[in-house]
Length: 465
Image (tube, rainbow, N blue to C red; front, side):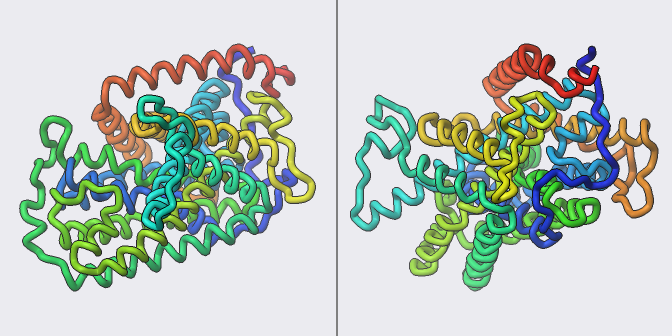
């Protein structure tokens, strides 16, 4: 018995009981729905004010290179190993069970905190909207557990997670109809902001373009900004979680991954240019910079439209991430590393109901009770770590199995691009705080305990041996 035992996946898609009805457009919209949310509506303002100024556009491009390289690796893996679980499945095939479990563990942490944090952010927007209408929630149920402030549970965050969990438990195509509609609404309000904002751009606001320098000092600068806005791209990996519900996964998954990254990069750069052109960057440290920019130029009505639409469209991030989290838990449970009951497929909706409900319960706990603002960097560090695994994995895949077959996606310049990806990801990790590394080490220890006390013995490969 060995922690390095590998799982062999079929090179062609197999029938798992999940309904295959998703196409390329569904996957691109799923990816955009997961990516474009708090990043474009919140993080742009804070990152411009505190880290990079107008040069935040360059920060987004640096982050896009790091994510885009990983997207190429995802695309080749997905076309050669069309198995649910994304990086978890890919690592199982090339490195073995222990690396697969750690990758899956990191992704579970990422998706859980992403669902919870966006739910908390959504609750904050809704509470602010209700306050504007004169409706005030009791303090005890209006925030995460913080007795000194008089808050004990975030009721609105709990309710939205419950609603999203129920929706994700429905058929994938039905679930994605709402996601797709909200993505189109996102496009509409972003276009509205850009069109209105272009008429109020003042080029002098772009000077100095790089106020904190490129490498910067004291945790500021364009590179530090890239480490922060890397957050804004997380979610593209949700596309690979849909592999068992896609009609032609070997072609559609690569298109979905790369398409969603390219489109969101364009959106981020354009919005950031307009935002910093309309409002001086040092004034953008607010929770709603896009709406704030409209109000600052006398377009309060447009700002209100953007605020309400942002409340609605943040749901797409929660839906996409919850979808990915439930499918990941389902994939890990199928292999026995988590209880087998979590791999049960609902006969009515053809979805992993138990895995979805577990994902919802976990996300509810974090969203309703745990303050997540201090864990933002933790999401980044676990994500960057498994992207390094992906880069190493594509090198090993090529060494073990050779070049892709005709019709499969081929990552160019291997091993040069994977090595570049490793260096960029490692450098971004080094920009994070010491406490983040300490929490990261604790999370690895917890993950290893779960594996050695449960997963190793219950693994399907262990039973085969």
